[in-house]
Amino acid sequence: MQVETNLDQENFDEYFSAGSVEVFASTNDLPGPAKFIGMVEGESCQMKASDAPVSAADARTEARKKAASMQANAVVFTSCVDIDEPQCNQLLVCYGKAYQLVNEPGQ
Image (cartoon, rainbow, N blue to C red; front, side):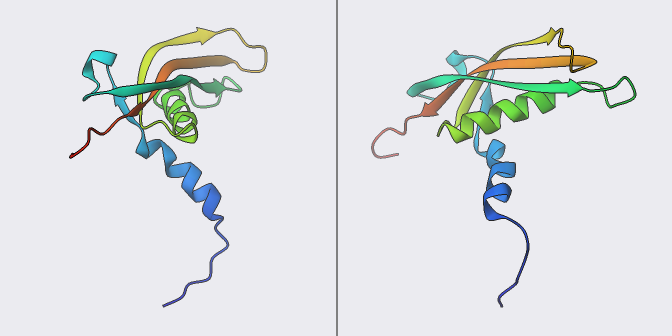
């Protein structure tokens, strides 16, 4: 059965890309060899005081999407920091290291 939709496949893939990136508490917790890909960051901005408060989960999800776009499948968050930003009533930025887990031959 063929279904017509106005959904953009690229937007759909990007929205769910964070799910392909696993979060680890530290590099010691990575389950085997891993290649460092680069640094990532995500932010959560509360535009007005009446908006929902900033969320570390939102900031981390944004960082995981960026990690996925870099072909990473693992991230280790190093910190989340409140930052003064004139465009946001409150801004939380989470920083992390993106890794590509290397599958050993035969696994």
